[in-house]
Length: 293
Image (cartoon, rainbow, N blue to C red; front, side, top):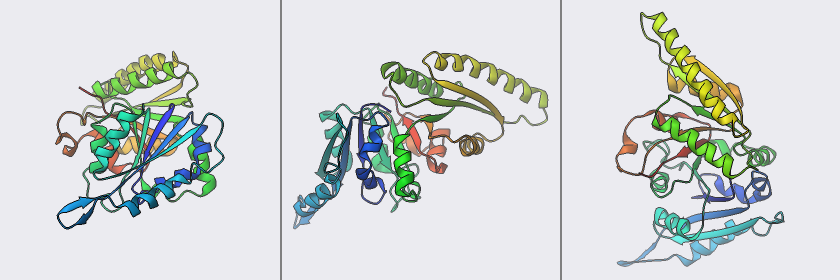
């Protein structure tokens, strides 16, 4: 999406595979890729200590990316910390200016977490930078050739569910800011989608709402076309989650874009919402914006 990318991996999410594809990620406009892993503290008696052996093994595993023939102007950093992974990410965010964070959903607790894992939720509270969430079940199925192409076109075509609410406005605002700030962006196209829930026993009211939604999408389309994006719009009738996932299936999208505030209330992420449901149910990569308040 932009210049510096932080990739957080716990070695069960498949994201460590990306160490082999830094030259491909560079084609997605990334010039600095930071790989991060957190090692659990080793308990000896009552005093937790750093597991120096585990740290060295992780550094060696992630450091293989540095040994590759990197394109000119592309840099790789490896950061391995002992202790709480969220605290480690905070130190990295303080050390580097990060434009995009990539995280996975942990296999060991993927279906037990209400959304996408406590570590990822903690990261969302630390930064306004977009977070790309990729399921390990997806990335682990790619062949090397497929993963190479996926990295080259990381965020080429974005699906933006739009309901004219605060979160939708924020998604559009951040996307415009990015394209204006990075004219060389690899984001080329986006789809604006509004899903109107059926009003029982009132076909006329449903049709009226769909017409109003199309008019609103046309306004937003003009805004995004003003920053040289190719934009198409669609209004559907039905369940918002189901129709959004169907649209992703048939439109060859790279990621679904959502926004949700995980900054203020630590319990907000346990409440059912459109964003939470997409994070929980989507097999597609999800690009999350979490605004600070």
